[in-house]
Image (cartoon, rainbow, N blue to C red; front, top):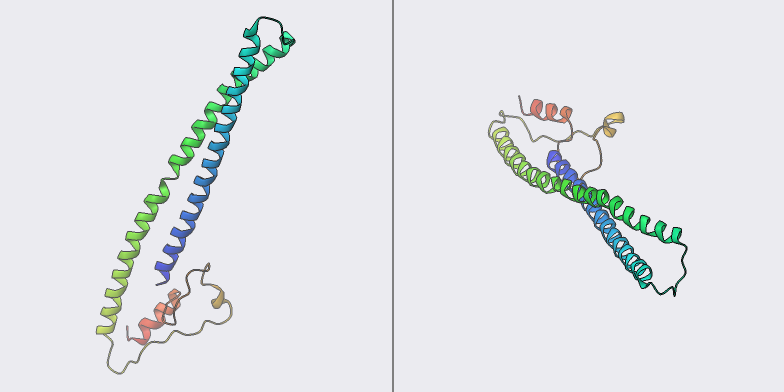
Length: 171
């Protein structure tokens, strides 16, 4: 049971992290799209001013060239950012694969656990009672690892408990 809960815990954390990255990436893409639209609008206004030819708007030639340079450079600078966002989204597909593998692994572990418990139950030597989990003391109580799903009273938490169980069952 402890292995199952840890796998579920890992899967849950992985999914949360992947969703956070995906949501953040989508927001950045939306922001980049807004910047592109704003840049395009500015470019259209600049082109309209420079193509008017009637001298209604007086802009220093250097300023107009600077704005056009910014516009052209902006388009080039934003391309790698777009590509990076696509790569991040593509890379996050690992979560789907790891989630599937973790799910299959959990089913396999549950089956092995049930079969092992059945083998142990079928082979308990005469006169041996039901195993009870000993209460950990001192530092041993702290060695159970990170918090995972709450375990019931029969959950084996560490190797010492496995050894104790097998010893009580006569193995």
